[in-house]
Length: 308
Length: 321
Image (cartoon, rainbow over all chains, first blue to last red; front, side, top):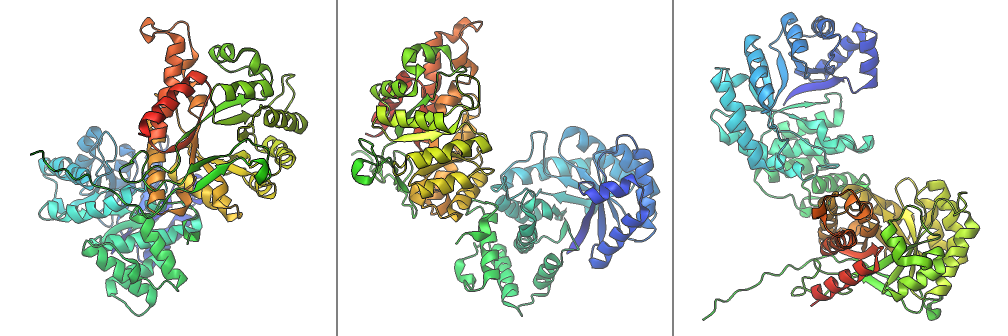
């Protein structure tokens, strides 16, 4: 699993404060911690920085590249800021996060990526928003995103399609559709494009205590359809362990066996069944209930784990 | 030979909870009869799958004193009856209401906050004036609601009133007093399946039996988000039938209050002539809002105009055939 660490994000108050104070050490520690935990790239979201982009983007590149060698993923809507950052990159091939099929973005962002030899994440989202259905999202990829890349002679191996994770709390119907989107995307084009998702989005606006469980259960399901790249939290030890269990097919624990079973069922286009679960094990029951909400079989509620 | 068509039938593992409102003297109350809703084992009006166990019920909303903010069309229609809750209750019963909803105001007619004493007096006068089962909805301000509903619940112990409205920020006191005084509750969440289910979990967690819970998933009026409300109700009802125990409460909605907020119902002057007769338009707005919601699974619709009530009942009659 190629993990793009998500922990430098302006939504975090500590990141906001550190940026305000130009606290280089804070960002360097966050960068190192994520890379040591297994991140192979770092997503950096500082917001649009409409006023100080000229200063902030280059500063951040220099700050982070002083301590780690991994690619930087520029997660911003401010193309001027991204370009200012790209100019300062001296280490690994950077990533632009992101373009969509929205005409203005699709016009400009791929050209910028080509100019600076950057990879680009392209969202399956058009001018009219994010379609629910898998087919509609695949159609955006093969009729709009990929043709645009071919049009400008952009190397397909540098394109990363992001079919978009939405939260189970409010957009539940999207959750099972994403699984099928990833399954189909891999055979919709040859060679199949790289695919990445923002995993933690699946638990946006979910109470904190349940976020990791939802993230890692969804991850196990998505790995069943071949997901091998994601933006997520490498410091979430349970998520990292779930990824390891599936990659190594480690069936040495009951919970690990259940994750593998779920992963195999999804891989085989089957629905996980209750017989896969040891109902006497609370951890397995929690995973089972999580699968039920992620497949949109049971309506999500914040207290979904309390339900019998 | 005509082609043989087999109509596919769904069979569901879950059902909607049966809830009885009101208590007669034999049951510890003073109502002339009770009203039972819910119990469904299939989607609304799919009689070829399952007979609907209880038909949707139409309630009329009355206030504790003559409201300032209601449409002049409504005030004119109710006339003197709207001057006090007892005469209004009688008039509403005569107009064909199957249930009464007494909405308590935030302030009295003197402009001061409604007191527990006046709230209790209003509820008791309504109970005396009409034998219909009663729902009492507080103004919707957490602290005031609790101050008013607890004494109301205590003064009417055993009547199986419906106390409302339980919301996520304010439900504990209302649920507790409903349980202590043998009443029911109505929950309300803002057009969201997840929040509706979550609140149901929370109130049930306090131990209130499921046959004492109504849920209001909230709706908008025709033209003001009704399709969103419709979809939420439809989804909750499908989940209920699929066996999700926290979506199985009968649904109550307030198309009357919503429709009479819409400018099409509210405004009679300076509107395009093509909008037609004001009164007819307003009644249509309320009726169409209510009937759409009944088709998406509403068990109780709360209306404001007796003519809308008559038309909605006629629509239900036809749907029940």
